[in-house]
Image 1 (cartoon, rainbow, N blue to C red):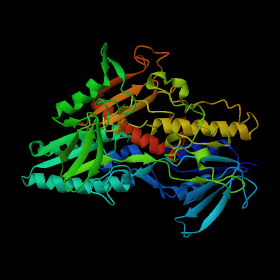
Image 2: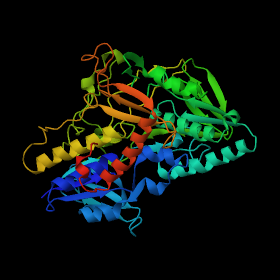
Image 3: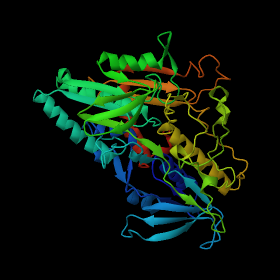
Image 4: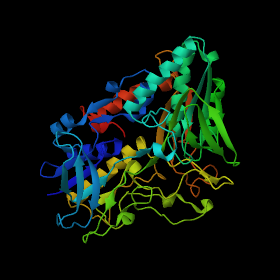
Length: 488
């Protein structure tokens, strides 16, 4: 009987584990290893960060849910991977160290037949001096605790504005190569909404700072959307949202350092500049969790499984080549390790072959370009596809070197709703669909994407839809009736 070990309990890992438990009978074991006590619906962190939701509204405890489903949950962090087995076990295994369940610090060997590395990102605030809520000067909305802290700090600025004091508010990207521009963009629009509804916009100087070459790049090279018969670049779409709210922006910026008063950044012209702030939320760089890997003899083979940034090597084309030679076919289809084929890495855990946006380098040698986004919908789709492929192999319908189900980001579309203010009657959101996520210039030579399926529309209805999606996806994540019928 098969034993599947899933590392991580975010969107990719939770989705994989849920489908495997649904599709495989109880003679097969599904194990989830994660240091997190809660599942959190990450997109709604934005609303926690402006006080519109509490952490309890966007999360639930994993252990009771997994116990009910028949999933073996180990609240622990993975330390090492042994894909060939070793002294501790003839089977492949991982070593873990517990952080909860009354076993803190205890180490354990967990063998596996299939391993799903769905650990998501490590938040690398340390890559930018002075960044972050724990050891730095800025806030974050990358998890529910960070978002709750961001709201507490934002309220301090709001109270100062109410007392007649001007406030400089800076929101954006805190590293030259960071991703999640969409989250930063969404947060600044919601922060503006909260300031505006209190009648304090005259006291707020709000600035968006980003490593995007153009506003609206969103780490996918921007897009062209068809709306009302016109073809419009997302640059215009995004800039209009900021301009209408008199929000300033700084683009092509690589943040290098933050102190308690200023943000120091370099632009693509090689100039070093500063931004004063009173409240700042900056997204950090991401990396993999830093696992080590060893072969049967105990020799270090970490570079065989992982890229230097800690993300896992999968079935992608990692050949170094000029931007003009990048292709849609470079991107992985099964997120399966090319040698250890019983290991998969859906979502943020896999190493992209290259950025989606065109990279640029300053005269000082600093590359300023967003890393590729793999969160949300793509993570869920990849998690489901990995579960489908493992199910097929376990049931004898397929071999590991001949998998049926594919989830390339160059053949996958994504829907994104950017909230721009919370409220039943005065809320706002920009609804966008993009197909495919990674441009396919061979199939769509003019724009890189299909204009039939790449569309965008702002309005109140988009906010209602985002509201609905919050509850719909939590319904799915909690395994409520007919959860599998809901899309990823």
